[in-house]
Image (cartoon, rainbow, N blue to C red; front, side, top):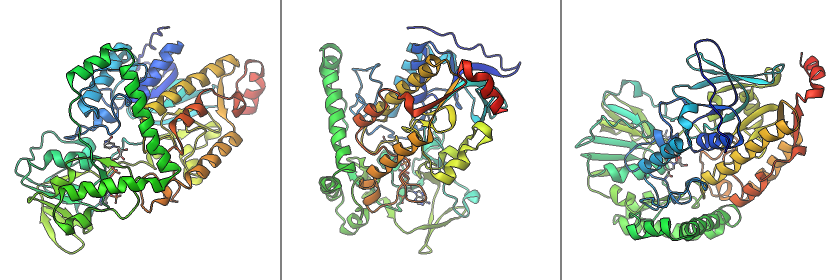
Length: 512
Ligand code: NAP
């Protein structure tokens, strides 16, 4: 493997130049760094926080875990035979990412505390100029965002929130300094984060109020530690770990098949979800209020063996009346009732469909990507590159999230593809490439067509998978192996190259 020395960053004397600039140090950013290192491309990674880990660093709420089995939710090239749990807890995933960072010596390529604010493409230089919040400037030929879409906490703008006198924080910004013991705690939201944290805090708090807007389908699942003998076998018996990974992969794909092609099969999930409620909740009225009226899979399917049990406890209350305002001491619902609250936990999710508006990107001729996406909808070619935006790549970009399988699989397909794109630019003796409009349009037309029958659109719910026009701009439309096939090798015919050595003078003249 070629080891590239990171650009020496003297940020006091002007812009820092590098060939490829990566944003973020989650699975995407770290994976991309490893690919660039392997290809011998000079690169730097900008990270807003002071540690690596992305979502697995930010989300440290009690009970935080991954609902995709760890043996699949990890890099294929960096297996870990001794995962403690089948569905890993957050600290172990964060440790894994820190371990990968150390093993590949990535820390020296990372600039911490560097929150990217804006970037613009210089037509004459064929370079991106990228600016961080503290005013530092980076100049790079390739700009690769590994920021993902689940990193900007969304806190509803409730009337009176600013005057609340207790503690209030978002699940992704858990305040570990706040002791919940004996307190009146309100949890707002019943998504993936809430269903994990509620059972963890319920026995500690004095009173739990769970504010539910829409009930979630929660299927049964127990997550016991993997026995030592099994972990030993994964490490020492050839083929066992790989066989497990393959088995998990195809099980998850079967779920994806039902979600995208045969939603009627999801009725099995409904049966399991209803059984889970019946099994844990005696009160018929409470059962009714916890039972969703939309199809399983329409929103993210959740798994827990103790969420409903936690809500059924005598000191828990499920509140289904809408929140109308917050007072200095509590929460008022639409029925006019005020409940006293000491601590509010916002498990209200993230800015997803508008996450792209948080970094200003201007392409050739000053074209604003946010304006374009606001106008045309968020879309990219193969979910990675954007027409007429040279050398710009998104990892887990538009329509490459998943409702059923490991996003790390998608990320690996994408980092390989971006590596190929960089290789293609070099091979063509060019400075830049961008997908053609027609390639991007036909990719997205097919994708949107495939999505029409998927449960996310037909299942009768609203979710952050859909934009304000009801179009799915977040999830991949089919099986993940189809995405792997679609990105396995970059088709040069789908791209326009610019800055080709022989053509450059005239192109520059045109650019002027
Ligand atoms: P989420 O799934 O978006 O859930 C947000 C919850 O807050 C929903 O129940 C939503 O209700 C509610 N909400 C939002 N605004 C509200 C308002 N104004 N008033 C009342 N309720 C409101 O967010 P999340 O639970 O943080 O999960 C986000 C994503 O992160 C997941 O889908 C998943 O992709 C990922 N995640 C994964 C795991 C895992 O692997 N286990 C764990 C955590 C997160 P509505 O349903 O009515 O909108």
